[in-house]
Image (cartoon, rainbow, N blue to C red; front, side, top):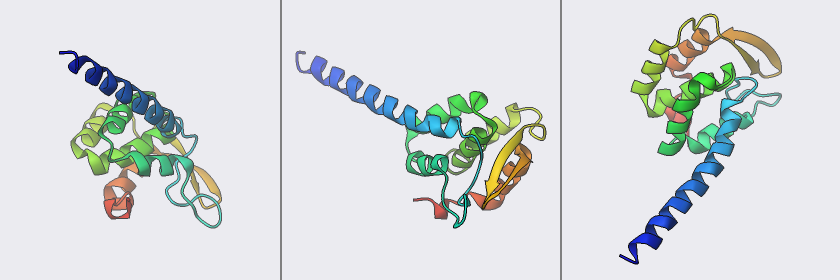
Length: 139
């Protein structure tokens, strides 16, 4: 019994530490000011939110956090979250689409190269569905 308590406490400590670090990084995704997929500036480069998302998209706890954060995320954050969930959790991706109203009225600030624009979230969803977030491109 004495061995079980320290092991359990260590597991809780490690889980909390990893969770806090991941949540801090994932806040970059959920609070993203604009959506850009491998096309920031000239020459095209990945945005900070995309880089974080690419490093975290296989982490179950990170995906749980993103799913819970979806409705409180910025419009750009929502686009990034949908991109990850479309690859890792298609059923959850579809659930979020079904429960989110007025997708055409949610305007997402985007940046492609050095051109900024506002795109309805449903337009980005169509791009995601057309494999714009193709899993083969993910590390």
